[in-house]
Amino acid sequence: MKNGQVCLTEGPILRSLIGLAMPIMASSFLNTVYSITDMAWIGLLGSKAVAGVGVGGMYVWLSQGLSALARMGAQVNVAQSVGRGRRDEAGEYARGALKLTLLFGLCFALVSVSFTDGLVALFHLGDAETVRYAGNYMRITCGLVIFSYLTVVLTGIYTAQGDSKTPLLANLIGLVMNMILDPVLILGLGPFPRLQVIGAAIATVTAQFIVMLVMILRVQKSPGNVLSGMRLQKPVESRFYRGVFRIGLPTAIQGTVYCMISMVLTRMGAVFGPGAVAVQRVGGQVEAVSWNTADGFAAAINAFSAQNYGAGQMERVRKGYRISLRTIMIWGGLITLAFLMFPRPISRIFFHEPEVIGISVDYLRIVGIGEAFMCVELMTVGALSGLGRTKLCSIISIALTGARVPLAIGLCASPLGLNGIWWALTLSSVAKGIVFVIAFYKCTSDDRKYKKEKNT
Image (cartoon, rainbow, N blue to C red; front, top):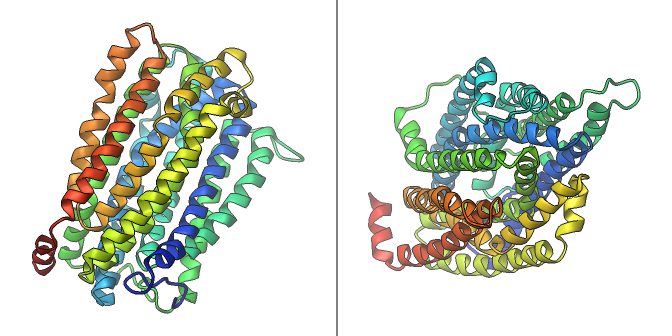
């Protein structure tokens, strides 16, 4: 380890992966706690507030496709350049990605703030209070989304170099700040006014700003970091922008389509009332226990695969994937057991109306079946993306995730009703987990093909 960076191209594979993955997984866990903390405090305001935040948060999620383009484009290109020993080239990819991030963040903020009312109206919530909550939350979180964008891309650049401890430190500081601000601003403790959903939004963007600031300041203490001494105002050659788009665009499309499909399913759930929307929103946050952890492990295997691909060590890539697959399946299995055995206690953390608790219990039991498969999917996407196979990942994910809509329509028309939506989520997750594993082994079976690609 040098300058806080884990060496990924030599030494014991398990130690390298654990050294990079553990801080990322811890950081992902902090993000999960961060989200659950928000939902737990907002839950005290009632299911309408939760539903409103859920709808407003959908547009924050939709916007992440833009940051995903810059993050994945930077992370893979920076890691592959580092693996080849070309750190100057890695710095140019990082600078280009950051300039794109600033542009994307400002454009999305302008559009979302200008058309908030119309965007919220697309969900046909049918309740004035819920609509008001959604609009208030969206204006603040989307209007200041630049902090989240820069945090995501900086995390990718740090991770690509084998440094996952700096993002962990930044997220820990941000979590502490969020946990302090949430009750103070939502409920109005002490001299502070009771801001409710607006308070939750302010707490969120403040914490994101702090996370971003910590990562920027830490660059000064990392002389080996490709970000060290960077001047954003300096022009970037077009080939670096093209490299970021080539790798990042399929990931951005995949993430955006995934969010749009989720928005369609949320609108379908809205027919069953605000309680169904609230459960879908909170359920997604609870699932983050597995989702964020798997995504964190995916970031580790992504950097590991990219650096070793750049160094021409494909057998090391395959061994790393096998170790990661076993690890993530165990974690996903534990989450499945928790959802199946304790759905009611988990639901009571966020909801207080008996009817909504019943909906939440059904949700956790059904989606719990697919948690291990979802973890495998996310981890494998990380591994394949590190090899530059973002287009393949996008095709598989869009096709199978898109199947959720017709499947949900058919199942909702059956006696399953609302539970048909939850079953559509589970069945597609199982299918994606299986297909992605097959795709990885097929794509990495021929070393000659990768040597040819590496030389072109």
